[in-house]
Length: 450
Image (tube, rainbow, N blue to C red; front, side, top):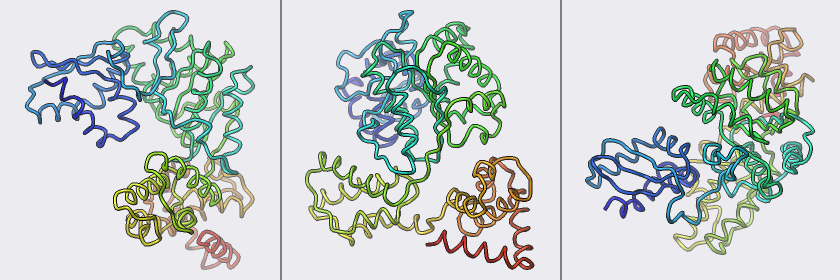
């Protein structure tokens, strides 16, 4: 009975955890039924089963209990489901490795939408795109590691997945392993618990390309950092390619060991800058063509794309979400996408984007104005030529954004909120005495608001 109802439960989970998570973790499962209070699933690998048990245990149990099923625990049998969904996502390490441990080496699933064809290139991301393309050729390692960093929704994960997909197509002989830093840590802890640490070491050091997303997650976790450092060194010594992403540059990740930060900076470090108007407009046109394949031809009034590109500047995911909402709404009510529909359908998004200035934009603009490097502003240097612009950027961040002092501190290299408060107060005092400083701040304010 439960096996027959699993499809409905799976669909409910899709709405709760999101399309991507559902496709990666729930869709590959096959429900085998319930016996003696144990619900059993077939999963493509032990890693997938462990991740589902750890992450989605409560949601699954809640729905099983809703349909009157008395369950106390879940078990996973490793193996391909008898009827694997046609849309299930492939994984970055689906081929058997040299030691024959294909399932053990399985990484996080890849999203089919995240390929190079779907990546819109503009000035803010062209260097990152070119570097990713070079790595995806699968030729001799020219820079190791490739380190991609930037804010949320700027394309880091998209490029990581695109590299993996391209390598799988061009170089199927290579062992490519993609996973998040959180998953790396989880598997390391699991290996320690199960006394399989040597297996862990052998598996991770046997890959040809290791790709680790959101590496800032391991900062402050000493044992995981230790193992990551040794894995990193072992692969580099074998001339194996490493690709890493994070939300900030290596030297700006708080609590990341200096030796790891130093090693990461030995390769190519590339910043994905926030999108500009032209790039956002290109993304909207590309996504509209894709959505039309699902929703059919929908008429969009002139000026809608331009309006969205101007107003929604936070990140690409929000922009795509806004456009998809418009397509869905238009399809349901049978009307074209007009300016009035945009105002009604996206009222919540538009309200949240009214204060368009971000801390990152302020930092860049202040750094440009005072001709200093952004990395110096966020780093530890305290010379007057660096400290004064840094304090001005802190002041403007407090005045022009809704971020709290602790949040601003995190964006200034992980500084304490008291440091931000001191910088703000210092600028307030100086504005009363220094005419030139006051003019600089007002000019920066106008530039940021324009």
